[in-house]
Length: 212
Image (cartoon, rainbow, N blue to C red; front, side, top):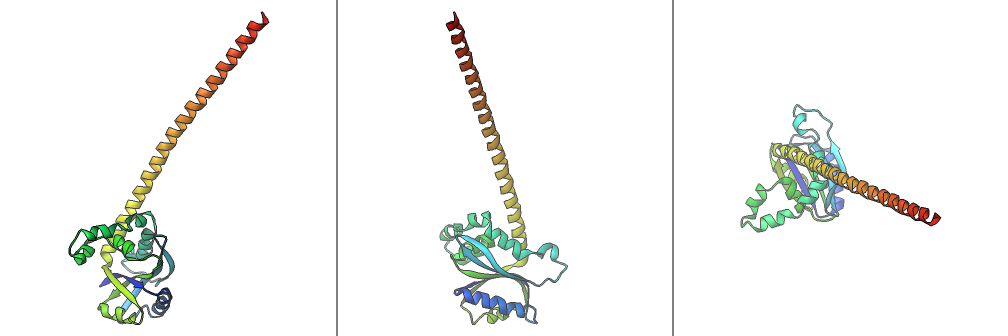
């Protein structure tokens, strides 16, 4: 089973230690780590601090290539900031929190779950039994969460499409506002030139009258 796993650490230094140890043992009979990012939530944004990529090409590269990097990019971007904080309101309206969490977007869940200044590892791995990877991290104080990697790949793709659409709408709006501002500036310049010319004309008329 290919999963995206998020490991939340109570102690930041343990996150770096875990990353170092997992890098040295990324491929073994119990699990295989393809990609991994150490991230930290700072000022409401989830930002990358360090990472690992096996560099091994697979037949699934079209779907899985750069999955964790794309995921972290979304979480640290404007969409991730928009999602942060919204899960609490959703869960608060549902009696069965566990079912609510399962049905909520992973992007939204991660944005909310990570606390300010908390470090986490987000990894793409293949595992036959979840207990082996969990046991590997048992000496650290952690919380471990999992999602189906295929679902996350589609979710990241949809989020990237949404971000592109948001950017396009923002550019279109800026262009529209710029056009309106440009029109206003033209009107102001036209009115000023007209006023200056009228003033010059009145001054010339008064000067001509004074000559008589």
